[in-house]
Length: 267
Image 1 (tube, rainbow, N blue to C red):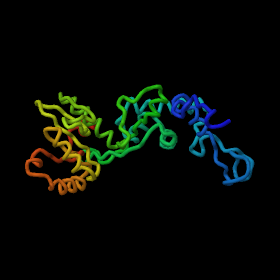
Image 2 (image 1 turned 60 degrees about the vertical axis):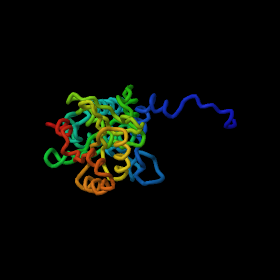
Image 3 (image 1 turned 90 degrees about the vertical axis):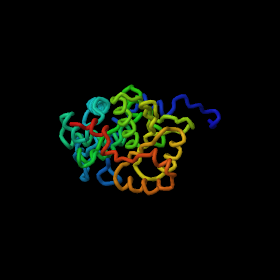
Image 4 (image 1 turned 180 degrees about the vertical axis):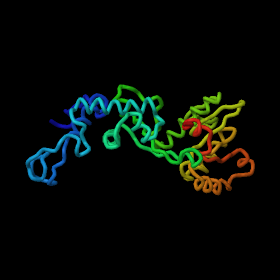
């Protein structure tokens, strides 16, 4: 059969959506060969006793148990998105070993991502969170509430969503990826007192001057929320190329000092 005659009715995305969890179950049950080559897969080096389920960290035992455990794990990320990995382990009531198995399985199969958030020393320092991917939402039969842009990291996207949610709680209109009057997008647009503020999340100083210049052309003012003091200092130095009028409309801040951080992680 030639390539022209072959017609693929089911896409890879369809397979992931329909059978993703089942495939993860099967892959999770594969036990590597102890001798690294020949011999019966699933046997110990002496070729006698088969490895017990779960002892290699890749299997929870019965496939139906694995599916239920994985679904419960993914559901917990939807229900409690801002739990640190330690808090999530306690929330699920699991041992460290079992929790790590589930976490690794979810990440390895593309259902979740792990990210680090700097809350600042005055709050809780750096915490690790888990973010559900579109594939993870699909495994639960759900759609991600807001689609993450392709060129945005999980960490950056978390800050964007958290800041926008906090601004709305304060009574302001906030929009992710808002377009300015010049058609250029800002990470978040916040409308307050009839003015529109562009908020840029700066995890590094790269491209921030370009972002600020574009925002100043399409918004009333700009806030650059920086990951740490090093990034803030670098951004501040680069912004010296702006005119005095432009600089008067730009403010710099640390993400760890922002009210939304303290709001999200008040406990």
